[in-house]
Image 1 (cartoon, rainbow, N blue to C red):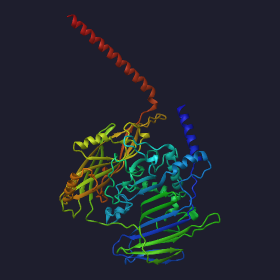
Image 2 (image 1 turned 30 degrees about the horizontal axis):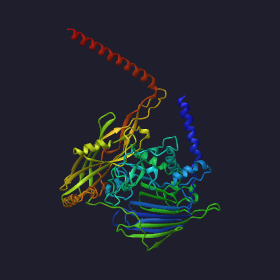
Image 3 (image 1 turned 135 degrees about the horizontal axis):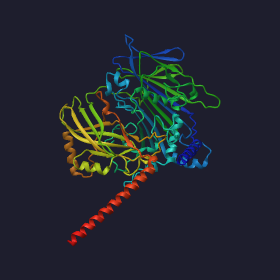
Image 4 (image 1 turned 180 degrees about the horizontal axis):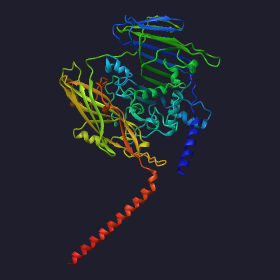
Length: 614
């Protein structure tokens, strides 16, 4: 009977979802593309040649015609006259509530970083993992995040000082989910009852301060970035969820299959890429595409605003010649023409930019300078290096300890004594939480500082909880280029899982909770500046002791082993099939225990009476 009721409920929910699908008109009136090509080999110059009626070739001046590493960056912007967040359905009863929730949304960002240690980019480049992109820094494992930015004061991001963080309502999450499904053409919960192979359930979106510069979680040059504790409720927060689907795959080919699903033939995202374009896009596709297949997709960022869509992708191609193909866009009488502009920028080894305007199949050189073109940073003696990283969980049961052992190599030029802080940023899924009062007590007795970015309800089960980010911070001193061994311990707790029925005796007695691989930051000051800051703090008690922390993400790694990766914890799940037997044996034990207590009391009382008579 319970199964039948659950099935009917799912059918009703799916019918409601199908009737409320967002019908978005993806016909922009204006679009622009900036394609940037950079040769990673030194002392070479990129050459451009108009080839044929619809192709442009990019080669180098290499005499041996060797294979080069080309870094390709593509930025696309489409502008729309209609509001992409509004529902165009005729169901006015549901639309009023949906549109009110959608009006609170300012932007939705889908961020995928595939620049990981086992990728071809990290292995093939001489500069190795020290190469840093402002959007796609080198990480231990691939990650994908969804970030939703709401208006100031929206109920979706409210968090009072003495209340606990609440999950968004089903309708609030459904609006975000429908917009994403219409763009990505991928099943996402709770819009779909099927579990997505890529995205986690959006009902578990947590909160994060916008000073952490989501989705990249990099320092944005403000001194108060990253470090914003839970009790600072003045800062605006954004909803965020980080998928654990990618980093749980052992083989890189499995990861490739997953992110290629995002560029399937029905996906609007596919029409924005210069690599994965297809004929079904018609007049929605980009005007130019690269015929070469990329060796590694380093990442992409898709930002959906009310009246625009911004898309950025970065890839690595190993070849001796790049070919750019012109794709004529055909318009019909039923579709309005779109004004498009495409700019090609070549970055040579001497960092000089050659800028071309692409018109039809020709490239005309320009003298103007175009901003916001992203470059990369190469080897730097001022970079920290992670020589070793152990990321593991100890103890058993529902109360465990997360252990992080880090071995750091300071910069080669680091000869001045400095006071530094190490920060390990952890992402815990909805099945794991940290007790704020417990970690505060540990810090009081000399333990590391722990920063929690959202208020956490200790009693909620996993199904009604959110993901959360937690930082562990420890201070250390550096006096030379000697390595630093730092150990951090964080007490964590597992949430109770909802019980389930097992079918045909095939019981799932465990569910997995995931702790993603960490991001590690460092902040340093010279000893003299620390002394001066301490004097200033003594003179002014209102100064924030963390105001001078300037966190820099460490992206330079030695080859790390599996101990540095994400952690999967098996959490026991109650079996509803055992409900009757548990009730019976619980009642039986309770009755037997009660009888034993009564007998013990009777015997003890009788002995006392006998002793008094004697």
